Image (cartoon, rainbow, N blue to C red):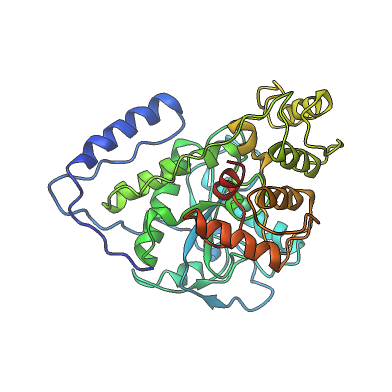
Length: 370
Ligand SMILES: [Zn+2]
């Protein structure tokens, strides 16, 4: 996993960074602009950002032994789904860290689930005890085993970003802190910008919110600039079918299962009639989308097509199995994501040059519905 850092960025990097910067200011207003790497000098190593330790913000001791694991293979971005406070003070940041620890104790966890936390004011804090210890003195392969994403905890470092980012974005200070922390973690653990993901890539969750999730390509790009590496190969653009009243077929069946998974009542019959349209409108309203009753990319990724993985039993899994069947894979549409479904998903992923991890996230969903 360890990658060499390129110290001489391509001549195009500075120009690209300027372009990204201009877009970032105009499009979001709330997002920071990454510094352009010098085009004719060695890139300076990313200095460790100030990280307030558990002792500094007043953590309680963990209630069990925090063990170390590693090396990490990825970084997962979360949002706390708490209020978008305008109190940007250090005191508010430390209070947040203490509150998160209490919320996580209440879930029966031994400590804060995530390794790091970034407040709306841009303060970076240790989450789980031993996360700063794991950073070592500049290069490391270990980190404390956390509890922030079932199935990914032994291979990923979690960053909680204070706020709810379904439709709004982090503050400039928070974004800059996130870029810096991600760059420092990549440098420390030998990861690349392409190893940064959102929580929803691996689990059925809105986290880190649709607006922040949509900014992850910019996060990877900004981190690449800080590292002085070439920009990561952009993920293939996802294409999604457009479904509307009158549509029919397996894609409609899958969509109907996914709508049912969202808690709504409708008949799954593969025919997009007035009843399905009304349910789509209801779903779109709940996500703050234009409620036109047409399922396009924005609705699929809001996400209607939630992430599914082995061990789940749900209507969403029936949707996956419906699509797998239509794509020629012999699985039973029973809603149980067992080893048979997992191996079919892996075969499908391998055949389509996707990561063969058996996790049906946005990339796999969009290919299944193609
Ligand atoms: Zn999350």
